[in-house]
Length: 173
Image (cartoon, rainbow, N blue to C red; front, side, top):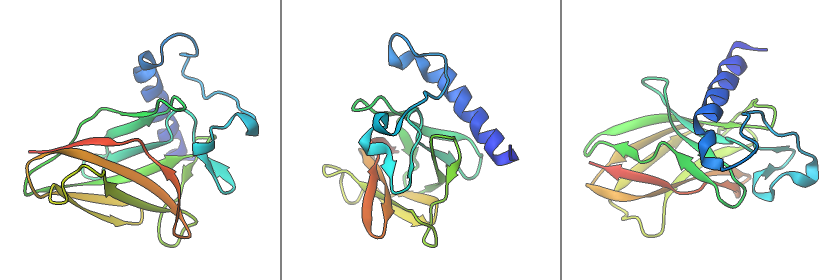
């Protein structure tokens, strides 16, 4: 197992153990469930692969290497853990978006890859709250005005959205 995969698997395993309490009863052993193609939630299917059914995506702060927010997937009840995403007013934070497949292998994101990354504001989020810059798998968010809103992460393929994250509660202060 490669070093990167070992670190990612360890981080996901730790996240599973830490976050297992939000799922209610049963299935809290932290193991990735074994699924057949028919059991994969349709929102996790990409062309030729599928995102992890437990923790399909996370944002890792570039400066510290720490996991900042992670999607916890419960089918239709999906959400981000460790919210809100805090952005300094008149400052910025940079993150690496990490998407993983069912085998916990990282899915490459970037202009020269099969899948591209996009990040945008929610409908009710003020246009002047944040500016977002995406380069390959790197996301830089600039805090432009104090307040709170929502951001969404999308995985794109050939200009079409193939995955939409739940909203990330975002606070600029």
